[in-house]
Image (tube, rainbow, N blue to C red):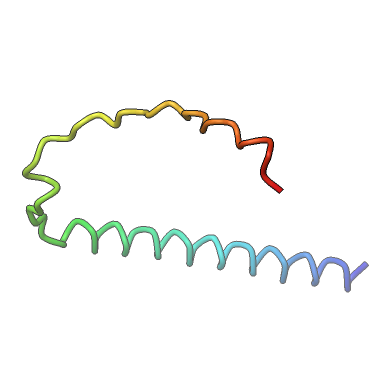
Length: 67
């Protein structure tokens, strides 16, 4: 029983440390992206145009006399 409890405590400590590391990483990346300057690109200057879907046109049926 003592071994099980010690393994459970170690597992809980590992889980808490991994979650804490993920949270700190998330906060650091969030701060990094907030510090990055917003630059204007050519895509940001031009207005977006909707994409036109072209119907899949069937090709003429192949000739039957082809070998």
